[in-house]
Length: 523
Image (cartoon, rainbow, N blue to C red; front, side, top):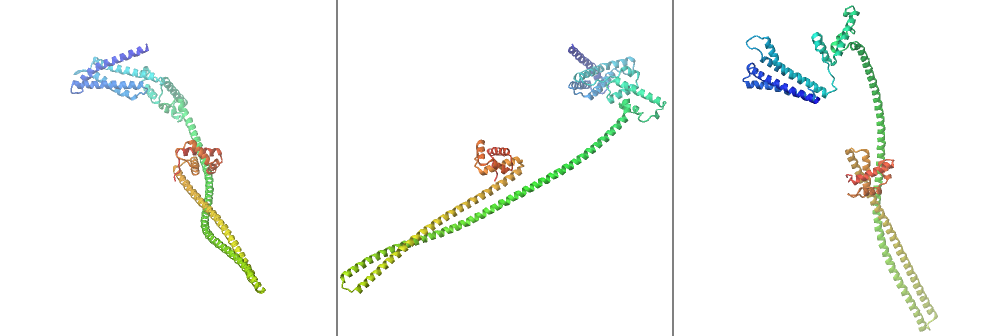
């Protein structure tokens, strides 16, 4: 039934709008052509259509926005203005010509304006109904009864003005305020015998503040409230001052703490820098010592090579001496053989001489025997000398061989020392290259503004890349296995200066992931 009622109201409103448009169209068009100096009747009709269509469009927009809960308040005033213009034009079209107005003329003018006024009233009712439906929580505003407008035509507009200006929606509430103000004014007059000028400013506040929407109680409480507000503002200002003082003290203490912390950090940095300088000096000294050892090793290698050459010359000389001794030994053997042969020949000569010259005298025989004995002793002496020379040559050869072995051993030792020096030099070069890579990597990390944890992980990755061989394309498990093989937890703790084994293990795992993802330090 409610829907049917709403549908019927809308239909009748549209019918009323159509009637109003039909009735006003002809009158307004004719009046516009004849009295408003529009050039032709068609132009007058266009004027009438424009006014009516403008009214309908603005009414439709007003109703639509009210339905969408976005009411446009000011759009109603142009609608009222155009409707008033239509009413005036319709009424003017019924004005008499060339004769004075009569009562019937006024009735006719009123009759021409009734339908537009009715239509606007229905639109306003519909708009308010839509607003009440879509905004049920909207505060309703009481209307001042019509009888009051009639009975109190002077005081009622003042009440209406206060209700509109200061948002008083309840008419009974506004009436109560007026009654309280009148009662207070009467009491004040009774107190000062009708002379309100004797009242203080605070006592006259209700009459002064009533036009601004204040009640009697609110006006009388205003001085106390203002004093309380002033005290509250003073307390708030004092509280803010104390808070500012506290914040200042806290800021000073915080600044002092930050300064002390900065000093501590500065001392820490100085200690670290001194430690790094000491380590750098130690490394420099170690590198200098290694270089000196390398130079000494190189010099020793040169000396060893010289000794090797000298030993080689001595060996060759010993071989020459050995060959000479062998030649001497062979000569001694030949001489011994010759002496033996001469001995045999002497013995044969002696026997032959004894046999052949048996008649010789004993003196001659003795002389020959003594000579033979002397020859024999000389041969024996020569044989002993040859044997002695042979033994000496053998001894010299053995000494030459021993010297050669010693020189070969010394050469091997020197070669080993030279190889060790070369290894130390290569290690020094490797350490220098690693230090250069580390320095460049630190610069790149500083440019990239990496976090401390990322720096530590990259340091572990560089340590692993220096110690092991990681090929591109390795799986994460292979990289982790290789990294765990070449870098221990203790190495990570020393490199990253951490004491926690769990942290070191996490660093090592993250370094393995970094290497598996293709990280290689820039040289």
